[in-house]
Image 1 (cartoon, rainbow, N blue to C red):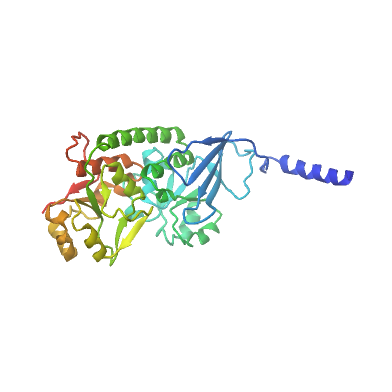
Image 2 (tube, rainbow, N blue to C red):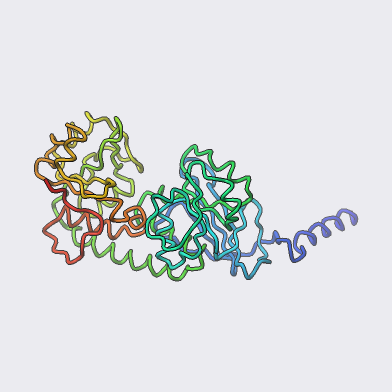
Length: 368
């Protein structure tokens, strides 16, 4: 019995008394960092360290788990079992999308972006960065040369492209905020990204300001009896994607005192529909919001040449089509973490009776 007790004590001492290059497996009670809107992320602070867990939005379990340890406190006494160890603030990140590049720059940390993927779609960078190629199959040789301290990627269901990246031994941050069911939930992930880049306070202040702005805008139309119907986007091949009622865009429409033209589709994501389905249910929609990429503003005449059915919609005939040119408005860089600006645009479009002094951020009415 004494021998067994001696072995147990010895093992315990090994676990908690590791040298300076090891991590203790003793867990102390942490303080949860409040996430008021986001559903797929939890963050718990243990002294100077933060444990971050990301829910898998496509199934059970976790999409990712991270232990963030300050660069100047490498001996943080916390367990890293089943978690990727990331030292922060990041100083040489590989960023896969324009969305996250935009936020990082807005937080004043452009200098921490060492490389990007899909460089041709990323606007606004003022420094030279390494182009690591296509986000679906990035150039691993360039990544190895860059030696980033972390890679910020956007995952999707059944994505197997990260397997090879994982073999590089570089932490992969799964940026799945776009799967949040609300626009504010998606934007709240800026608290996580702010933490990663040493701008936690700035990110928190930015989020609080946008929530206050968002709520004040929503209050302007909360009591309106009018709920205009909105048709979204354009045909993509033979499919026309429409936002579900409980998607982030669907919730934006609701908060703007409007509604999707497809109220029966209550999904939290997009719904693929045929042209016939869309026309049957939305030919008389009040407004039509589209996105496109062009050097020039799209016109109704140009739109009519893309698909003959477009001119049969009432919104086309009444010239109630509003377009967002993603090339000139930096839509992808700015809208995900500024849903208040999107909300302002939608309210001004669908509730012209609301007198707003705020400029349009993304949309313009299509001219003939």
